[in-house]
Length: 169
Image (cartoon, rainbow, N blue to C red):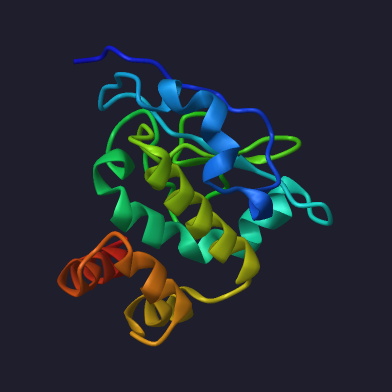
């Protein structure tokens, strides 16, 4: 089924987003969607170009691919090879002039879903310039913030499976 629509939000200060942010659009967030609908998130940084921002958080891409494995393998937001630039409009992430567009996210299912995704992006932006090995370690470290964030959605066994996918990506 390819029905449904994608809702495009206004610009938010990501570090001030909370459940109240979406109070006026809750009906749209709970609208019908299909597996082809996306939940794109656009970000920018006050002191970095979109290309610099992408380079600083690029090590998180295998994490996103492991969390959204089905979307990473489709034709409308596929995973980007490690040493490629994010120049494809229909890639998992797309570098635009003024912002970085994450296309890997599927349709937003509810307010909790978008809030969790926002937390994940905030974590990535706040913990830039890590190696892929460090991101993978942080996924699995039961005492760490990334692991705690993932535990809000996934069981420990699922996180381990996602870590295996991370390694493969």
